[in-house]
Image (cartoon, rainbow over all chains, first blue to last red; front, side, top):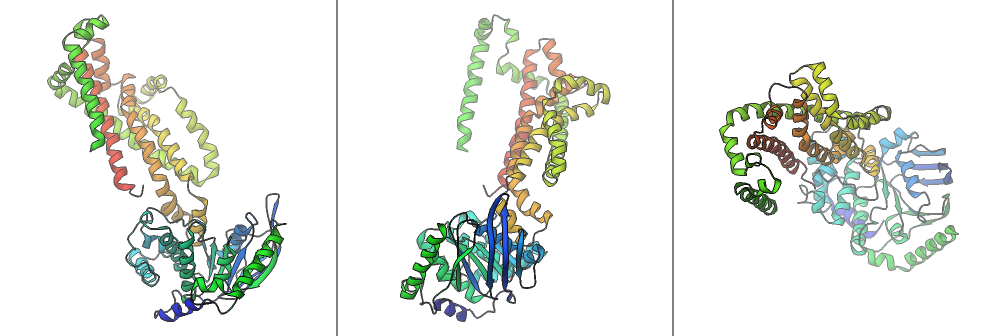
Length: 272
Length: 250
């Protein structure tokens, strides 16, 4: 976890939102096909409770399918995906919140109502749901934008609201599908720092799919490099610890640079 | 307001030109007709005023047919669209007959409907509703189907039930589509009501149009046609206004 994120966590006086008990993820001998196409082949991965695993791999290698399997949106053909003691898709759905690639904010709802969607779906009254989601707006730098419609927000802010929506669901596991792919480089770097802080303040078990090796190494504890389809793990790296106070310092650290080189090599090897 | 200026000027120009051409007799000469057959806008307005109580009485009948028929089509159209969206079986069963219903020559079946349901309101409602149903149902269904699958996945992991996804995501997505369909339908309610009355009715603007055209009451005929068009346009305008207040996110 980056040092800055730890500061952030220490600073925030209020207790972590939802305080979900940690849930470990274990993926065993997972195989999945999309029609005739074998997308995942005997995959084994383990993520401890509150661990953050990054998945990097070439385009179309089945990362998104893997994420949907974790989230319980699909049932695997072979092998097993378990979130804690939850094995079937219903149990996984109950334990995991999914953040899609595009923010998918509903344009007819205000930012706060978007963030409170999960609470509303569970039957919480509008005022109570807004109050609960509002606490997070203050903590995560969105105060004053509660009433704004998504169209009035910048790309970075939309992404924050989308992440809060995932967080407010109060699930122990978060499945994030390239959350910052649509942002410009500067905003993306800001958002990575912001996400590191948010996860430090409110730890969850996270699976993060990304194209960006640097992003994975900065945000995650472990990074699994996947091969081209059918996806299997080519290399698994531990992110360098401890990471520097800010992102720029962290990513230029020699240890970080060598980890990035190793991941890139694994990625190139897996594409062949 | 600015976007009203151009069409208003165009309309004023056309009416003005028509007034000049008709009142000088130039238009009648050109068409080689008696001047009585080519009324000027002023004569039409005069006849509108002179026959105001007759026209108002009959316009009310036609307006009721238009509004009730449209209302039935709205409820049925949206109801069928939602049912077909939720059930693939219903979609397979109903979609082809609904498309086929659009191919029915309404003018041809109108007399049969009158034979079945009598001279009252019934057959006119059926005709207006049949004509309006298709654009509303098809547009609403398209809207419901246009929801991004990623949004559905997101909602499922946020513990949404099927009705909640329908209410919170699919319905708002489909709303602008439903409005488009309803506006198309509103524009043709007047035509449908007049057709319905032609097949057999005792009152209504369609009945008057029929009478006046056979008696060469051309000025009042134009007044009646104008009233039908204005009623349909007002319905269209009200829908457009409602859309602007409800669909605020576009």
